[in-house]
Image (cartoon, rainbow, N blue to C red; front, side):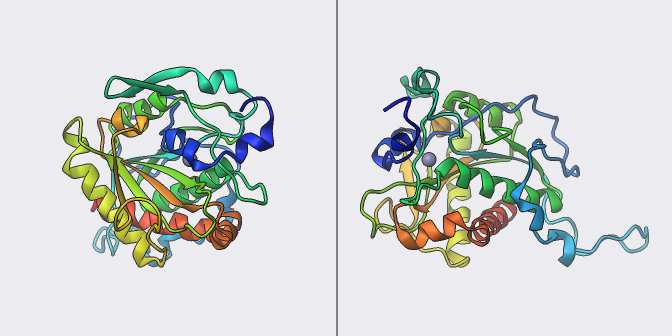
Amino acid sequence: MSGVRRPLLLVTCLVVLAGCGTQAAGIPSPAPHSPTTATTSSTASSPASSVPPATSSAPRTTSKKKPPAPPPAASGVVVIDPGHNGGNAANPAAINRQVPAGRGRTKPCNTTGTATDAGFPEHAFTWAVSLRARDILAARGVKVLLTRQNDTGIGPCVDARAAAGNNANADAVVSIHADGATDPSAHGFHVAYSSPPLNAAQGEPSARLARTMRDGLRSAGFPLSTYIGSAGLSPRDDLGGLNLSTRPAVLVECGNMRNAAEAAKFSAGAGQQAYAAAIAAAILAYLR
Ligand code: ZN
């Protein structure tokens, strides 16, 4: 499974589970914690240009007598990790090299991810959702860093993706993926978190972030996974990005790209925006 682009993209999530669950990396230089700065780290063209301003319901005022009401939705630093990358499939040697994955194990640097039956790749979906979620959060006063800065590069490796959240001292780290279950009837999202925890952040904070994410996606109308985990949650000990995180971290598998209904959502801007809005709202709820 190398050189050829398409077949690699069609790798099912049996493989993806080994790598789909990988967190990624490469944040340039983590900026200091700045609760009130709405900064983004990506300058790439964003498909979220049509995102409605999230501040529309939270008008700001410069009046000293009347502080903004409602107050900023949340503050903090969030690292969003868009799964995989567009250059992975064409560079198997680079992404297959073994890197530390926590618990004394190693794993491939990164994987290609999966794709819909029509060929829409997971890396493009995770990139689109990540940019849209970033824009929503930034408009609410959250500083957002991405683990990769475009959708054409290679990697980053799972250990570097974890390091991005760690180095940024992130209040929350959210990896975004979509699954590739071979059963086309399998559908629904699940949220993975490291278990058993290897540090304090992987304990209650990560479990709470996972529950908050699960509740947010469910309340937004997304169905719980029919094929992985329990009640939308999946404790895992084999995901390198989560194992290596020293910050509260979860991995969201938004659904099954081989399921026709979910594939349609993943491939359309409106569907991507719906996932992004639910994920961003859950992050805001967690930060509060
Ligand atoms: Zn994935």
